[in-house]
Length: 471
Ligand SMILES: [Zn+2]
Image: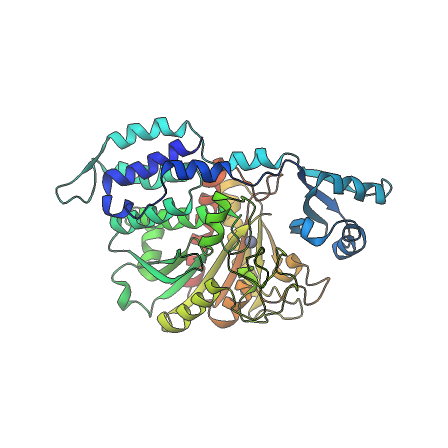
């Protein structure tokens, strides 16, 4: 049903930029086929099980009853585990515990929640009015009757819903066409399934001459199912561009800083989450087991790398050697070679869910970050900027506590956050976006704009922090 509205977006592209849209090989029939083949989760639920020791909970209570390949941990912290498993397995666990298990149903109907993240039909009506006002100019380039229509197509309409990979790629090209003096798309590699790994370098006043400017990097979508991280990366970059010349702060920050966005760090996984399995997490790279492709990109980076799992079918499997995930490898080469002269001052890695701001390190609580007072000031500053924008309270915590490596040393090794903080970025944080309610990864699309707004506010704070001469 959401195909109608997708058609509108693609139609808008067909109207305004034919050369780009020819790259779109998804016919409407293909899209319908793909959507109807989404994995069915009607036999499963997500449960929140409370425990003072989640390591023991998993080892002594869950694992004796359910094989690891039969459950999926959505979130784990020092108080509870959100775990997706078969309803019958949960009955067995509750019986095994003779009624003393402290738990609640976190997601009752997974399929229904998945549906709520997909584009809806009625958006199409509004789009047609707007599309009617689009026009081509004499050179067959994008033309809009007023400036307002640029923001309607690129902004208001685009952010009404989550967008699939193909639509995001088209949108990025439109963004480059619309802001040619600021936006430079760079393809840094081709994924195992042949998608482009795209980086968006945003720079005012000629990006080639700017390596001396301090640079902030924002990445989204390392984990495929965390769709809000992708929409939010797109939203913040769009706001930044839109506000240049209109808002004093945004203008100053874009004049003084460069920005590198990677909105979809895991294109293969993201595409798969739209076509086949909404809850897919890893990339789609081949492993030693043919029926179990996929590596956890976040745990593939080469700082304090540790093998996370023996079994390739595990959701946390990160390969046999550091940088085995091609996306992580491309990124490492890109930073070391193409951007070697750039001074990376800030790194924000967007994930979901839980409304938390994590500071390094993730691999161990014994490794203290440098300059901890200022790093915490930055993290709390981001949290305050969010609270002042949408009244949401994000917690600030050490990444090691979030990953559980304080309870089980060596549980997962280094992450993208650790790698960036250690190797390149003066300041680095991970933002775990909304929500804290019971949507988990399946945050409905009506939250795209509020989450975008609060994250943009936190990015503005980050920029001010970096430009503060006293830091
Ligand atoms: Zn994640």
